[in-house]
Length: 250
Image (cartoon, rainbow, N blue to C red):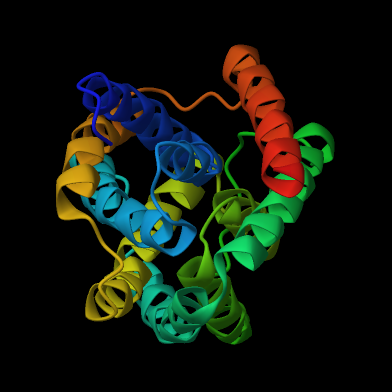
């Protein structure tokens, strides 16, 4: 992180990550490898990335709410459950060896590529949402485990959350995205605290990237969400596949 052009690069990458994360998910599959390749140790890259994520999701949540899209208090219930799980996941991430982390990240990248390519289409139509009773408890339990994964690495979780909210809770894509960013904001609070406590955060890098993340997240929350963005999907698949191979073999 000694070259001047690293910082404009972080902002550009952050913008792409913020937009992708808010529209669907998987942005950390771009930001984590970039941070690692710029010289940050894997655990520090993981912790530093959370600074940008927490600012991005706060701004995106405000953007959705300004458009009248909010799922409170449902998203708060899920967020608290995920927050508890994230404490466990973040502690695992802090303790894991760098080489092991890289290989796990490579495997996750390949899995997410397959999800991007083969996940079922989500139709944008009004559905009768299921946010109370047994479905609320199903969500609370599931999001505890989502939180463990989110606290550990977070990469690619957005896709899983969207699919879960759509098929279990019958949410439209826009409301699922609004719920997702709010939940990620809540559980990232505990994850970031763990990384800070273990001195795994470089604030200057995280805050510079957050400029891009916040801008991308705000823009994505304000425009019509279109999952059929072929360019972003194709770019993400190619980038993730290349990064996963590099992380595994190098």
